[in-house]
Image (cartoon, rainbow, N blue to C red; front, side, top):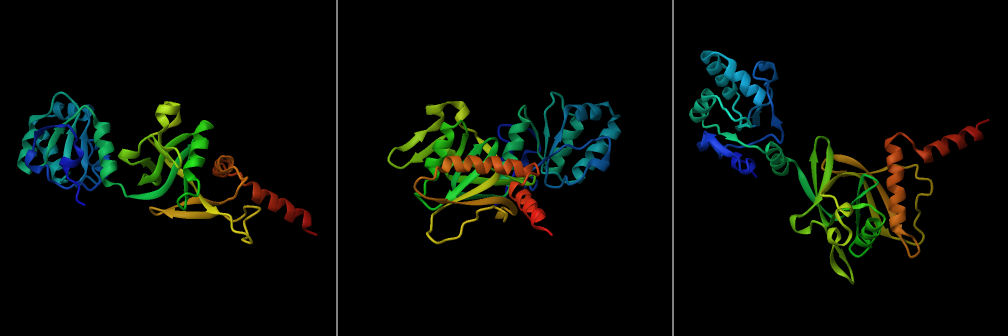
Length: 294
């Protein structure tokens, strides 16, 4: 779906070039070029360009003819729009914006514009599961309906971890990582069979929830199957591909007597160690091979 300037500027005030609000925005990042060096003017086409206060001051310090030249070169790159956060804006910038039909907007909330860009333009999918931040590691718990995902998440919250999303998790890819959050209607909510919908923030406070977190581990819950071979050493590293990124993935069989919250905690701690280069199973395997060698 086409994303336009109107979609991403929020409540920003349009100073000039209002006829270009339907221009398409193609980049999820706010570009911040140095006006004194055209070498920094890369990938500005169809991008939201921020003219920072320092750059605006530099522009005003130039002779009028030079200001016209610099502004003209900037608009030749065909940005989607120009965002300013300073109190005084060059009249040459406003004049060129009107002629080029490229909006110049003013805002005191640049981070809000950046957030809208990410929301509108980064790739996203929805996944059935629960997302909990365990020891700072975003852990996506998946599995069949009624397998016990939400109950495990509630147990994790009671242990001091943070709920990010339940039932439907919105995953986005940005800057080479995947972040997850709840749907707008599902924020802070957890569905427990027999209890219904509970508000985790209201019950356990601010520290029990997080608006979003980076996903670093996928835990797949499945029914214990008699006779099925489950990994005992954990030498094989499984991955699950989401939005083009391979995430560490672990299958945990569910069986009466197995405390899933404890196992997920251990899985998260173990993954944190792996991220630091510590692979317990591999080290044990290497030690055993060394002792068995002639």
